[in-house]
Length: 417
Image (cartoon, rainbow, N blue to C red; front, side, top):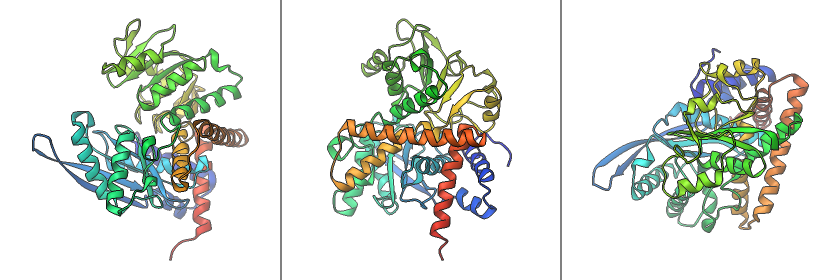
């Protein structure tokens, strides 16, 4: 298979590589590659001014061999079926790697949510959710927030689903507000998982986390809290960025002040007092110990991989490094903690939330964080051990474990009919 740069191309290359290491036959490889279900829906929206806007929505359930489908919903202009298919596939391997009894799914609407009013976003979300009612549910497919969506989005989906089924169903989504069945510790779970994975990789290499410099691309749900957690743990976060650009200070940034700056109405971190302005592309090539791409997929490519100066990349986003860039970075000796491991904290605590919803019994934030740390440490240890035993990169080892577990589930269950 030739290398490609789209998310779907990258996901397929990674699967093919894992299939080769596992010795899977062509039939099993095809079974693991093809999504179980791919749905495209029309989402008509009545704008506040009376205009009718027809949007396109998607939901892909990639694999159900290990349990119900699980995956986020994103609202972003570039969302299309191939992107959603790739993200759903990565969710399958991530859930298997983390030891969670889910298959992978993903969904979204091709829209710029910031161009919509609150009422328009609610109407759009509810119409999209109504189209998905036959597909989703606590035992079928459990959505969660992603790019451009949040806990309020999940509350609207839960309410829409509950209205259609005639009873309140907390477990249909995760990442909800606490008032309607959300879990303590869910909001920062992906960011905390990034920190845990990064610190495990540093410790393994004898590096004190308190001595490292970090640059984070994407100061959103994942990147902002990751910056906060890493700063609080003693790391020097020297650069962060958002869609409009980034800020840099060799002395280190104060994430708390940056988050407060945005909360007070600023629409970008650019221009924050006492910092230099950098572009997103310049941030990726800063001379730092650790680079955390936490925005969108495909930002590190064959074109800019040679300019990466970080010694370690911890993938907060899904698929930020293309299949073409991977071997270039490996040749440079860059350690990559892959997305299906590094950002697994989000789906881990989503799983905890689902379990709590099904039991109607909720845990404390300390209990959630303790169990998250156990899952992340176990998963990293398994990936690291296989990497050392077979001479694989961390990404290769993570995919061999994840893909192998899904293939084993298929072999155990058999083929119907």
